[in-house]
Image: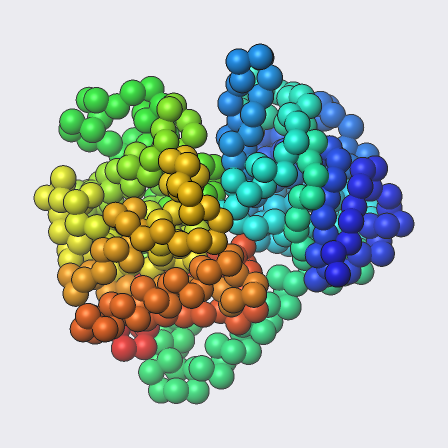
Amino acid sequence: MTKFLSYPFDEKAVRALSAGDEVSISGPIYTGRDRLHKHFADGGRLPVDFRDGALYHCGPVVVKTKDGGYSVRAAGPTTSSRENPYEPEFIAKSGVRLVIGKGGMDDATLAAMKKHGCVYIQAIGGAGALYAASVKRVAGVEMLKEFGAAEAVWRFDVEDFKGVVAMDTHGNSLFRNVESYSRGVLAKIAMSACIALAFAAAAVAATPKLGETEEVSDVFYLEGDDAASAGEYRREMCKMDMRHPKGLEGFPTLVWFHGGGLTSGRKYFPSIDARRIAVITANYRLMGNDGITTAAEPIADAAAAVAWAFRHIAEYGGDPKRIFVSGSSGGGYLSMMVGMDPKWLAKYGIKTSDLAGIAPNSGQATTHFAVKKFRDDPRQGPLPVVDEWAPIWHCSTNVPPIVCITGEPGYEWPGRAEENELLIGTLKALGHKKAWYVRLPYATHGWTSSCGDPYIELFVLGKFPGF
């Protein structure tokens, strides 16, 4: 049964919530991401009063209206774990009662929530357009000039903003429960000889004997005509970070794209061991910005980042024949489009079959909902559309090895598990020999972003069953 929360969020009511409770939030909520948290940690004053209020880890897409106000186009959650170093102190000193985001937070934050009366609300990753609809008014903005639009502190007056209590004041965490369950499931799977060997290899890889990693940051990945013709917004967005093994030769590379419904989000590193696998995480242009209303721009940027890897990874010791592409949610969609529709990489003289593999994590296999929204498609919501903007449209035996990972129906984004299973089934029906589907038990859309990483790592290392 849904529990309704209205501002101000009383401590007694918050402490009565339990992990697993579905909630509907109404009232003001304030966005706050990395810049706000670091500003506060460095001694800066908070620009708004968070007492008995709600903090939303979100980098919204907000546009100015003709009357001088603001309209929210997308307001999906961002990954909360980036704020782990700051959140316990923020909770203790600000008096905030609700922290909203995706993916959960660490034990230190859980302890602070228990002590000070605060809960963590899991919002649905990739649902930026859905949450934008719950924003009834943009009531103000602070630190816009200092932090920029994505990091500014926006006040959204919301109605029926839905989420699930994932960390409560009693010390309970659904994320910890899923992690424990997943470890148990993986241990049982490891009874088979193939998986046992795979996990043994992964265990060896996790030891300090592998040595150190090196990191490069904010590399501009456009080259040639792409760089020459890029406008200001594309130059700002088309940057990547990379971690790679130090002292190894011939290692594989994973090119990773963040989620956010193609309208929000920014680059971050997934939980992949960079002592054995190079990990490239790239930003890309977002729909709703700079007049972008189709998925062509983000897909083109994703293809350009992959092309950079083909051209340059050997300079760092990597093998250009072992390049994989992956991502979470919207990033998973991009990985499928780049790896399945041959036109995007063909521009760079690369065939999709040149990729070593694709590993989308809860990516949309049908036409992305942001594409439908921006073109005012009559089939909105869970109604599927399959056209050239749908990865499943591009199924063929030329698709490289692929593993699709999702959460479980009823917990995952509606239809996401089923459409990924259909994509893999279609490939197999065509005669594809290296296509797999992994369903994570009890995993929500947000949880797949971390729970799926071990499967991706095994896939990239060539230790996946049947690979």
